[in-house]
Image 1 (cartoon, rainbow, N blue to C red):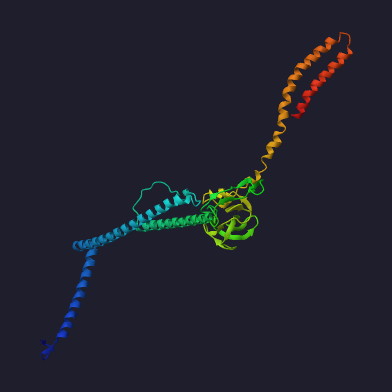
Image 2 (tube, one colour):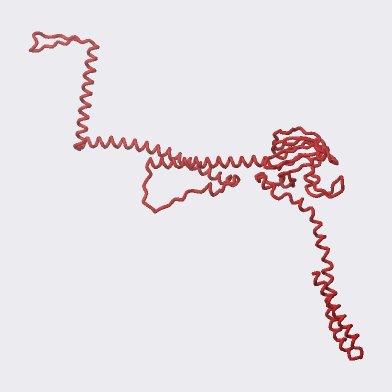
Length: 391
């Protein structure tokens, strides 16, 4: 491209050669300059029109502001919908936690009213207003905090229940023989060897030799030995001064110090020691005192062992009871029979002796009747005095 420039000031014309690249650069420069000028002019006119209130500029400003508010409102509504859904989910979760807490809190020893209790609120009624975004966020944060507190409470309830479960596993509530009938129970019985009354300190389970002996509860083996009375014997300590004893076994498969769980096989039924036939002698001891195993077998699993052992030692104290009625009944027959014949004899004979004494005085021998009458009266009066002293 060739351009020829002439001017009166120039002595001669001047020719300029423009290539395609130079022409493109010139066009871009002019376009940029026009854009800058137009932007500056638009900005100046827009600001001046907005300040001075030109109608056209005011309409444009309202249109732009309206579009911005519409976009902002839509964004706020979307966020509020999301937060409302989150709030509903958290409230539903909180209700589930409260209902679950009410069901299981009683089992854990926690008052259900404490789980569903809510802080008191009140005050004078003042005209309200819609919640702002900040207030809604604060409400969500408070609800989240309450949910975490309920979750912590449920963790405490779970730990309490687990503790009670572990405690129940240490109480002998399982029968030590899977197959076999019950023989002699706990209490006084006729000893099969001596024929005399003797205290049976446990329960006998009749079964065949070789039947598995099961641990009634979890614990630690503290004794595994042979004794003349018990034969092959195992004692398991369950804690809280609670011990179970398994005697007359034909075979023992545990040793001292072994950790035993509920229902684990510890030996086999036999007839070793002081025994008349194959059976298992099972005892429960609390602080070394034999207890009735039936109280533990029939007890609830959630009941602690120290409550089960409060009053099971009564059979030992009841042994001398038959002697007491004999000592009390001995004096009753004389007390009941003495007053009956004496009282009717006193009342008729006293007046009879008094009336006959004066009738015999004028007959002629005053000394003899006088001596007889006083002798009869004191004899009758002395008779009731003795039973009165016996009473």
